[in-house]
Image (cartoon, one colour):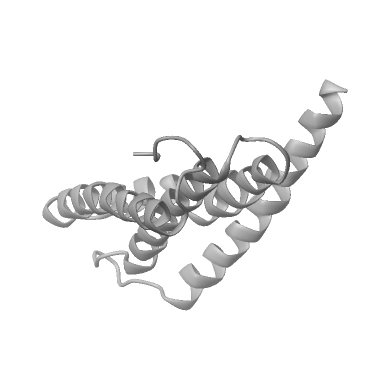
Length: 138
């Protein structure tokens, strides 16, 4: 029934998020930044996540309806893994801890570069996974 779909979807997201969060935690611990310095690990994690999410969502949309394996993949890999891997909360905390000039630059560059990376991912998916009988995701 409908509830079993909700439960299985929630499990997909939860399992994926656990994986993504674990990978992010390992990377953040492995590549710490100096106090007041550019938080490079979070910055690169968020940019890479934006690129991969843009690619994944466009490739899935181009390959057909959001049902079956596409739906499960979107929930597990997109919402779960990439959602757990990227981090808005750490990004905001790091902005809060930085001094004004670096904080503003980090915030602006992160958002602008994140949107550009998502766009690049979408463009790559549109080139590699042609839309299945409909217009490409833009």
